[in-house]
Length: 414
Image (tube, rainbow, N blue to C red; front, side, top):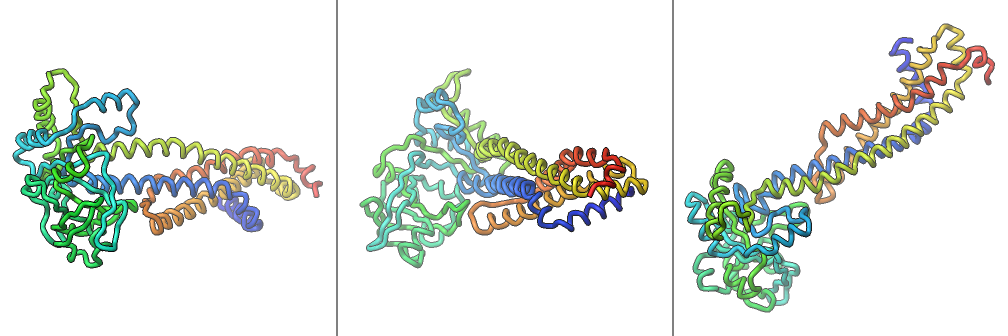
């Protein structure tokens, strides 16, 4: 039997029982759609973290000198306890790093964990859950902040412990309606009055998290309000991405000298760049990639078993047809090919419908939620291959059973 004829007969059989075919393929459609949409979300998140989040958190062409590494969440208890014994990062450390990197565009000191969250109010208006940072003026350069109105924090603000602050666009908008009008007004942060000297232009949201709901205080003012943090951070911005690795090596050397570490002693600090945040994120998503195949395989197996049962039923229903074809000269191979192709076409349709459903759901996720989604070619190819493979694997037995039917017995069947 020619392949084209087998395909025609397969399509004719599937079209003749459309509703049954759809419910037969439901397991494969759901499994393939799940695979496509989950991979799309993970790939979209990976791309988003790489392209946007790292720059928003750490800064473009920047690295950090930290007490604890970014990937602390994946460490065991012994490593966490060892990190807890490390000395705090101090202004003296920031000064040592700055001396070692005269070519850096900015070297800043910023408060770290635990980051205070406070209500910020002006007259009868209050904004809750505002993140408060203590920083030195170069931090504003590291983060590429652009001033919408007013002026940034200055060195005299830090030196004289002034009660001033720079606020994010969202805070200014909620408290004053017109963000530029916030400059020169006094706001209350946890009961303390602070003069607004500047408003930072809007940076937007990343994964639904606003990057405009914050207040920057001079580092010394911040410590007088909240005390010293446990993870003060030194941030360094270089002129280009190529300059980061050599600068990190010089910063590490300067920190070892400042902390009086002997050769062979482990660092009691960490020098991290955006790659560490990306690696940390990918370690988390690797767990999902480990679980996804198991879930998808279960769905494919269930769908394949349903296909096999339906094909066996089809063989029973079409026994007379099989006997008639054999009496007209069809060989066992012809019958086997006919039913096997029917199973493959049926499961491939399921794979295609699953891909389309996953594509639509991924688009909906990207449109209506903060999660980005990015369809990848390999996930579509894998999904279609799984659909076709299910037809081959689970269609062999029904096809072989149909091929073994005795033509005389089959012709007698009603």
